[in-house]
Image 1: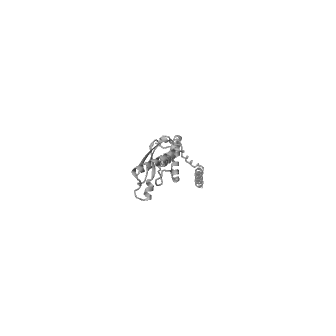
Image 2: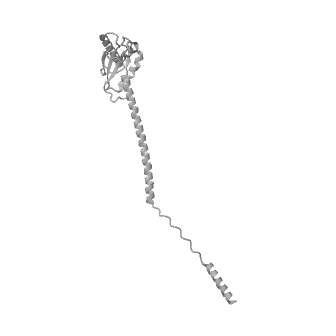
Image 3: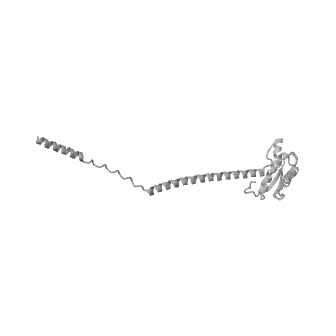
Length: 201
């Protein structure tokens, strides 16, 4: 009996000792990685610089496109003004007066000539091939003079316009019909000085 009691007591003591032991402590959490603020700042600055560079490039591209478009517009306007200055006028058979339907062509030259006072023109009178050479040279001269008088009456200095006649010598159309003759009865214009570049009024 004593042995049983002693054994029971020993077992009980072992159980109590086992129960009274504290569990091992939980492992400490791993330390958070150290934050390198300098690296973060560098990355943020690099990102901001990249965004700013892209925006600058976009703005420059837009400005270049606008400048190119403006240059094209100005060049087109200058070309149109030059074409207006050299636009021909046409005459009726054996006549040197300015036809009403040709006045707008001459009137369109006036503001361009006023805006470009350094421009000088040569006005060349032409005829069809009917009539003698001498008669046609004289008729071409009268046609060129008629054009010059028209422009002088609208304020363009006479000294800015030279006149010449080629009579029937320089036809633009061949053929013995009214369609060809009508194209040859004309005054042509050549810019002989100034207008480089033409100022667009």
